[in-house]
Length: 234
Length: 163
Figure 1: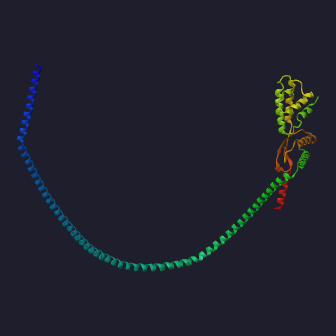
Figure 2 (figure 1 turned 90 degrees about the horizontal axis):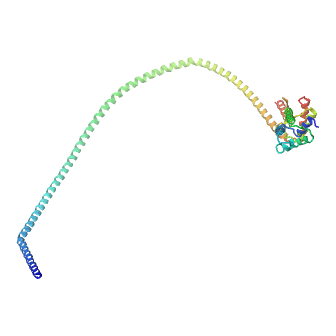
Figure 3 (figure 1 turned 180 degrees about the vertical axis):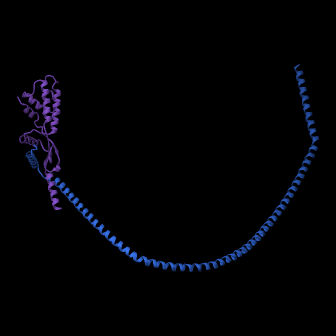
């Protein structure tokens, strides 16, 4: 029985192997059938790629051409603009210079006219003023001389009176000052004498007291008591 | 038996100045406080260490001579009377140019007692600027017997004469 089973199993295995081998064969055959299609696809892809590259190169070339043209045009425009600016500046400058020159001439002419007119006017006026001033000066001088002459004598009198009064006052003040000086001098001498007396007194007290011996001191005290007794104090 | 004056003399022996008198009065007050205290001891024994030894010995001397009253009451009255007498004793104020010693004060005290018949205590003040002599103050009277005042008077006269 077991052998049968083993045999059957071996048979199944053999069948399975055969089946697999068959399937491999079929698969390889199927792949071989698809090979021409794959090759076609590859060729097409290469063709498309080459075409794309050609288009791209063409596009780049065109674009570069456009850019070069645009740059050239722009440079031309810039140069034209610069030329135009220079031209305009030159024109404006010339116009301004011309205007300035004309204006200057007009102002100069007007100023000269005004100055001339004023000079004439001032000349006439100055002459009038000079004449009037001279006349006034002469009148003032005459009047002043007269006034000085009038005042001179009275001033001399007043000065004499003032001098006399001042002399009197000075004499009085001198007298008072001399009296004050005298009194001050007397006072100071008195103070000085007083001070001399005080100094002498202090010096004497400081020196004499120490010069007296004890027994003399005691005798002097007893003498004082005797006097007190005589004067009925004790 | 000593009389009152002799007792007074004994207690005031070597007491010449107001300062000494005040000290004596203080010690007598202390003695009065001990009259009724301390049992049967004599007053001088009770006062041992409480007052000056000089004062205590004077009391002992009087006790030895039986000069002090025997009873405590009489002793108390005696001390009070003595204090009053001392307080009434006049003070002679002296300004001197030097500090007198006890011997000279004794001499002065003796002179006043013999020549003026008075007992005084001295209130001494030393003022060197009076030069010598003294200035006295006694019972409201004032006398300047100093050399300083004589010198000042002389100097003033001389200054006046020179002016």
